[in-house]
Image (cartoon, rainbow, N blue to C red):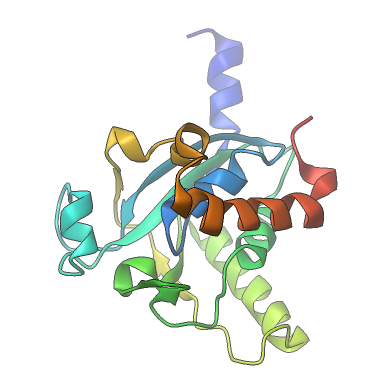
Length: 187
């Protein structure tokens, strides 16, 4: 790796977010300018190397999450969080639509104290704005491990756009995101 490549990689930041099904989050973040990589996975549980089946059972404590690697020169962590809050319902405890269980909880796993502070500020601002009729229940927790999901979960929407779940659940979220964040889409 060249010195330029090392410097470029060192300047990247990572956000780890859970807001329901990881397929929905991934489908949005891959279209956001400044995002360089999105991986679906699991975080927040007590079992090492969990499987999708185990996480879905609700017994591992993990949430389905995406890990978003981004260039902070192009998009900041605050903007990553604004997209996060726009694409899921942060007021439903352990649920997003028909997906129910702790694995679908709204959660921000912060990587450092700066991310924690920004997340607290954004949650405070959104709570004060009263955008939802119910209070925000998004969990804020330190990241204590991230496990990449099985290969078939990666790029799920891009590879399965014609499946009913993708058409009924993911496509409307992507369309809403594109409309609301048109100026921040990849060109």
